[in-house]
Image (cartoon, rainbow, N blue to C red; front, side):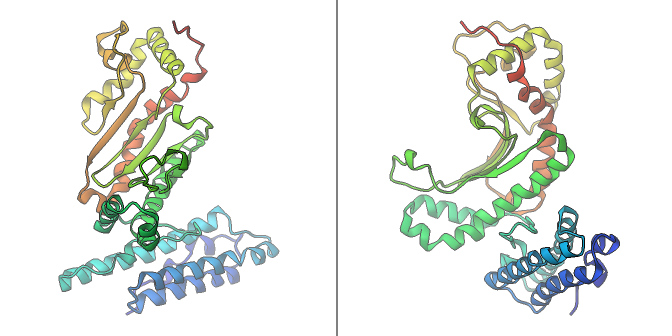
Length: 347
């Protein structure tokens, strides 16, 4: 049965004279090949992935022809292509859920975890129990031979969904806060060779970050999401703030304590994030009891963490992270400018 309406294909590209219709038709034909594969009932993830990769390569190969016609496959085109593919995957996801309801059986995860490594389109629909299983198995078998044998499972169940989640969250945050100049990074599974002291070459967790480009990322505030075998967490903070940064933090509070009190007031009305960070053993005198708990920190983080569960298995996680980061943005704006404050004497 045909499920994908022709009117949904590449609307923005067809509506824009900048993109020649005969070339948009070619792009559409490559997408139709994928749709026909999906509508045939194909459930093998490798076959589906190969179709998406072929589609991406074929579209990228059109770049020269677009340029010869005074056009380009630029951001607007890629957004239109991505939106069309998003419609496809949404319909497939709906069909998957309907079949699961009718049959009482869980079907292949491939339809909901399709990720294209060329970066043209991406869609996160949740991690799966296989993600958690992989992390635990890696912890028990942290060896090169085991990892190489299970590398495809790592990519399918863990790395690709993490990249998809990071990309979607980053795109939504960047769109709303486009003047911040954010970039995003996804961690590698391989440990730094200089830090392999336990004979285990792989991390059992992955994370992504949203931050400003910096050579000293450990001392710059970043947004992050982390997933480990036991729990997941996200928030805003420093890996390790410099002593000079925190001295400037205290000096800024001393200059305008009311401004910082206003900043932290929303924290008292929510239960998503808690303050984290070591305190000085010898307490420094705070200008206000309201800010004392923050004033005496060696570093600063606002974090949410919880045990792994159903929250991870839904695309609703995207909204959870985006809304959380938006709530934390005023804190980011406060801390990211600290290093430009006047120098402070540290005894």
